Amino acid sequence: MSSNTLNRVFLARLAGTAVFDPNGDPVGKVRDAVATLRTNNQPPRILGIVVEVPLRRRVFVPITRVTSIESGAVVITGLVNMRRFDTRAGELLVLGELLDRSVTLIESQEPVVVEDMGMEQNRTGDWLITRIHIMKKGRGFRRKGATSTVMWEEVNGFVLPEHNQGVANLLSTLSNLRAADLAAVIQDLAPKRRIEVARALDDERLADVLQEMDEAERVELLAELEGERAADVLEEMDPDDAADLLREVGEERAQQLIELMEPEDAEDVLRLMTYEDYSAGGMMTTDPILMSADYSVADALAAVRRSEISPALASQVFICRQPLETPTGRYIGMVHYQRLLREAPATLLGSIVDTDTQGLNPNATLHEVSSYLASYNLLSLPVVDANERLLGVVTVDDVLDHLLPENWRHDHRDSTRGTGILGNLADVNVEEV
Image 1: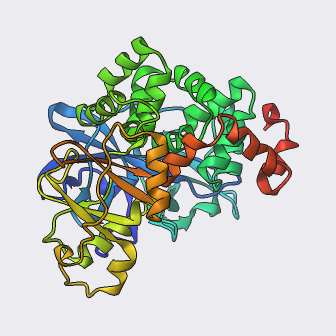
Image 2: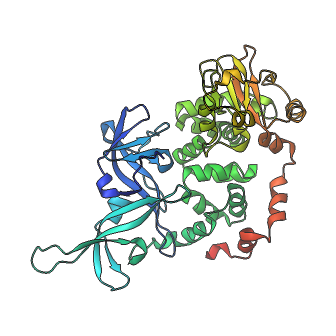
Image 3: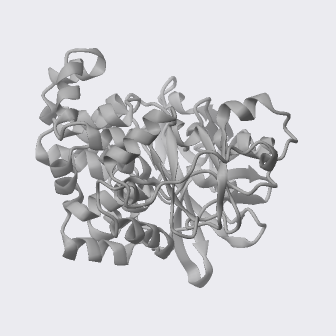
């Protein structure tokens, strides 16, 4: 987030604050925040904000899309999903459900009323509710009691709904797992609990998990999600992974989900689905780092630093003529990450671009793609059309997914069983968690 972002934000005061996009255009106003309670009285995690857009429609904006919270303004980035907001299992509205609640001070056992809640961002970038502004009961007719601000851990009375306890306990245990390890654990759960956990995960986390699951199991899990939720998760997946999954679910179901997706996301996925699965076009992602020759090294390094960029995609910046969205203008070449580190920040990318790496045709075979990567020691390579426009990029991890045998994820899970948290969970009866 911006260096101007407030370190602590009280959510009742945030209500009504104007929301803007990066260009300064108004989007709507903050109406609430969405949180999820955690076990052992840990501070709740903020999942996002509820924004009222024109026509009094309330939509959800993930907290990861909020780039700054300043006095009188919230700035967000990315496309806003205009589907009407509804809470899901495990989610609570801070203003709508947690304020005005009667709770108890743990030390004195004194009953108090919640007037506001303060969220803070921790070192990992998560926003947590750490403070509660409370009012003690007053004495006398219509007299208000004293107010004060206490830490979340000093108050008791925010109880998880009983039917969510098992899922919440399990998610609390699994919260720090990498997506691949979380996918392995979920696949070992009983079907009923697997679905409960999937529904409780936020869209971005579930998208990461689905990308790491075996084909049959992720198709089965997606089938259990209602249409709009499934479409939201597909939008959060890498376009190539979403295209692979839609190929697997059947033509009728795929068409239904594509119609529910945002048009821009659906367009990328539909384009990828026209290629054979084991071709360069079928394996490529349409979201590489794209810049024109007049961008600077500083611009490129800022893009590479973004946490959502995978290491393989961050290894190269692809230089093209406008437009800088796939399919782009004419492909010029690439700039390697190591070269960026050796140049002055003001250096223009056009002066250091590598034009020797030619793009592959989207119909190139898996063998051709893997041979190209190996021959030139690349982590990603460009895919171009007959007019030299960049269509996308194939990364080495996508190639490995296609080269490894179909059951390689099972083999990996077997090799990690008995080690770390995965080994501990193997001995747990997950129906009782």
